Image (tube, rainbow, N blue to C red):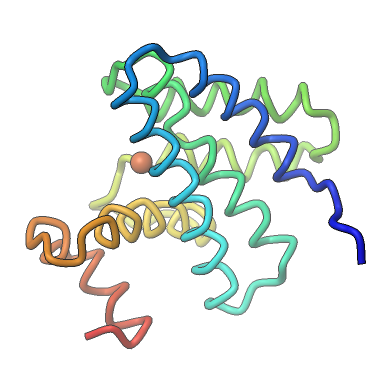
Length: 160
Ligand SMILES: [Fe+2]
């Protein structure tokens, strides 16, 4: 079967174009690793929690876009809110997401820095994916491993 061109491929073009325009090579590399990593972790977590592949695709896309403005601008302050606005523009521009899907993704991006609080199910998938990528980048790093959210995830996936 021929490989399909999917919505994820299209969104990757926006992400790749932004990252490839960065002159800071460390930031560019970190952006590729983190945004692609959180996208994949999001899809894995969504599927693991019993959601269908379409929902996992949305989790993948949320992960790809969640820190878009932070990498583009090199500024962490309010990057969740700014990335959410950016994602809304990208998803609308892409042209094949429903208003409900755009709302789901943008809300999760807006909330993703609030790791101490529990939000809706899709929001929590993105937060967990963010933490999972940070942890798996270096499984030996105690700072990430000891976080409550990471401990919960490790238990959920039978990794303790
Ligand atoms: Fe992140």
